[in-house]
Length: 304
Image (tube, rainbow, N blue to C red; front, side, top):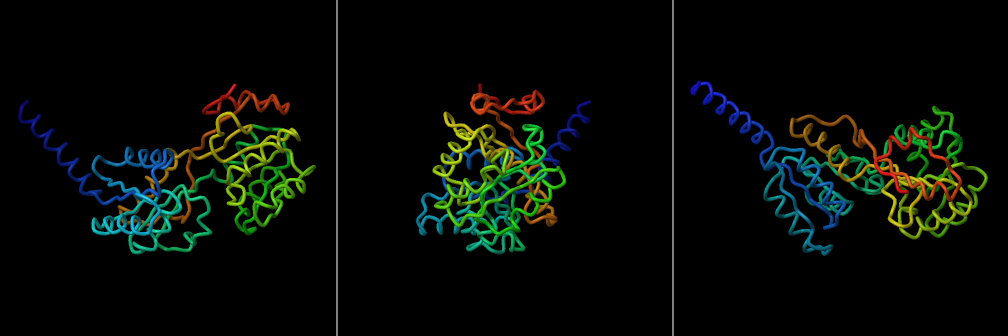
């Protein structure tokens, strides 16, 4: 019995040693700045990987000296895989450590940084896939037929969403804008052409002032407003259809594991398998929208 027990313990220790050897301390997480959502994503990834597998670094400030010092320390540690959380972490890591395979997440518009053109960088989109978005809109607002959206991005960025809408029998109407200053006119151009307004990930609308303007417009015109993040407290849209930092961290884990195993992910930009749906029934009542019970059951959180 004692020999069997000893053999079992030895086997368990050996398996642990092999797992640690596979990862070592070779996964370096670099965070753009110390804020809660970045920390949440990092914690989710750290929890998913074996103990001791990850070393986490945070830029002390945005100064070039602090950024370079952080990246110098990472370079000395020579990680097998680098995980960049936030746009600045991704951009600076690519510049300073171009040969290290990188997984990036919580980057609003990776196309703008040229990340999708790199052979050694793999991303997790910060918003839901086109298929997940359309499916959730159909669940949440089954009678809606027209989705409105503002965009300053090239048309190719929304091609997948256009295709998914066509498959689902929905019309996607996009009002082109150059920047935030044209937001109000863009909303006027969509008037009468949409049953629901989707915020999307465009840099021209992904800011507080744009959010407030779109939210006010939606309430005044009784148009459901959907956003790709958790609705802010006290000023909520009808619903948030989002990839939370924790879900993004889990999605990043799969890419990290592939790279550590010497495999290259099939896609340069991946999507989380899961999304979080949050619903504000107070907003729904204010715009006379009835939320189906099926949507309520699927929601992670309901405000009422």
